[in-house]
Length: 270
Image 1 (tube, rainbow, N blue to C red):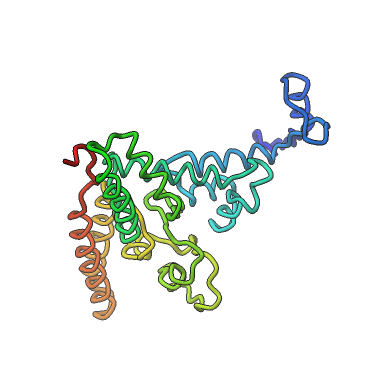
Image 2 (image 1 turned 90 degrees about the vertical axis):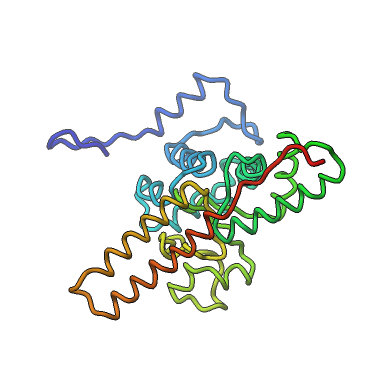
């Protein structure tokens, strides 16, 4: 539906998309019939590419663009259960994304922070230590091999523009997920993270949070400044001001911890 001034136009893309079959040498489907394009396929394909192909994609922004009511609906839209009929095996695409992040970290191009990031760093470090006994120099190519191996046991979901989530569907990860804690979901009813509740302050300090260091610094400082400003508002009760101050101090301690994390080094081992 398009609006031009006071006039309203309705355009159906599907008949026009059928002309693609005549214009391009598109292979037939498995049963020998032509592939029938629809506007919805392109909409979902765009969403999947944006989510899995861009390092700093924002699930909330994508949800707004698609006019979904909840980011969790968008997450379902781009995961294998729903989108597999378009991309075949989306797990391969997910794995490539994880390997890309881990390779960048193993090469020292980015530094992973957050408690989830520290856990991933340890997994990468263990793999690098195993290889250091077999080779003299860990080259960028070997770092990629390290990332491939580590990716077998690591989950990374690009939940927000500013941070990733390492939460899996295991009882341990779900039990410590802060987004589920603030929404009050009982432990025995937790099945996946709730990204609609995954705000900056909620994710900060969550055991499943993974971030890129330079972004982590910036966003933590913004949260610290915001909480300190709120703590100075005299119209608020003393209890509320104390809560903002305590949150600022918690985030400052986290800022110090993030600052101490150094990039993984590769190169000469002996």
